[in-house]
Image 1 (tube, rainbow, N blue to C red):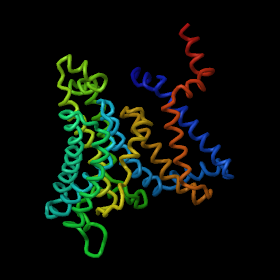
Image 2: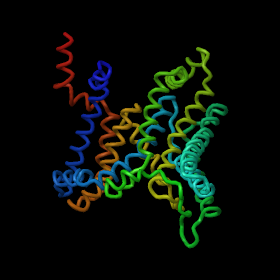
Image 3: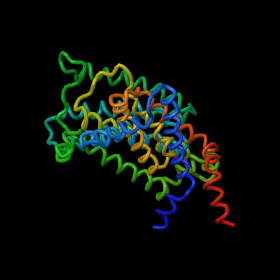
Image 4: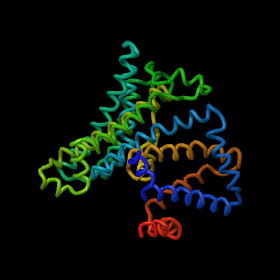
Amino acid sequence: MNKFKKIFTTDSYIVPLVAIVLGFLVGAIVMLMGGYDPITAYSALFTRVFGNLYNFGEAVREMTPLMLTGLAVAFAFRSGMFNIGADGQVMIGMTAATVVGIKFAALPGFILVPLAVIIAGLCGGLWAGIAGYLKAKRGINEVITTIMLNWVALYLSNYIVRAFLLLPGQNRSEDIPASLSMTFLNSLFDNARLHWGTAIAFAAAVFFYVYLWKTKQGYEMRAVGYNPHAAEYAGMNVGRNVVKAMFISGVFAGLAGAGEVLGVFHYQSVFAASPGYGFDGIAVALLGLTHPLGVVLAAILYGTLTYGSAGMSFAADVPPELIRIVIGSIIFFIAAQGIVRWVLKPFYFKRKKEKVL
């Protein structure tokens, strides 16, 4: 209980909460400048998400890939790597799950679904592992390689769908019989597209925390992330930990891809551009301070704002792009913590100092 209480009384969690409030205030100011009513807009946003069971279920569905891609970016960051390639890893996971789901459709569902999910995660991990290997063996910056691999993943995925999986006359694959859908919950939430990927995302967050903070391998990864030279001097294999960190990061992203094709769409489209899950995951990881609990909470906030922005557009005639200003402002205030602490100084830090004295 004391540990739980300590988590929610540290400065590191107060600053993001204030940053969120400041982000909403900045959004409100921009709306006022544009002649919109911020109170009506924000009311419409939250009504869109919590107004009925269908929209609430769809908002949860929106949060799921954000959790996994946020965890992917955060895990790599904790290990000293900056994974910009989560978007490509999501696409590789999608494609792997689609191939397994269609080509092995004769298998019973209780074998086919776990097999597709596992293969998707492994393929996403191997794809990220390429950048980790190049970093460990050749010293090539992972930011460059992961960005390049995003494009390779996009065109490779499109080629596989067009050449082997295409539904005649359509710009997408055949339907995937394997499904992650939560049938018993879908009917309860007015046929919202809830799926088991959400449970996988929460399990991934638990794994993230336990592995990094409760195991020897996780300690080594964090040590490499803090100072690779000191870790090497202490006898740790830096290269192996770099590859392993990128692999696990890619597994999270690959699982996000599996959830989208097996739980939401049940087919894979030929994409004109990257779907963007990985880039949103970067924002979620930064918003969550690269901690698994923070990433989960950040994904909930990000998903709520993203899905609810349509309500702002319909009910308050506010352009949904304005919600990006709110999200960007929140990330800015989290990055510029000095501003937040300056705002808090007369209230929180002064009282805290008096208590210590």
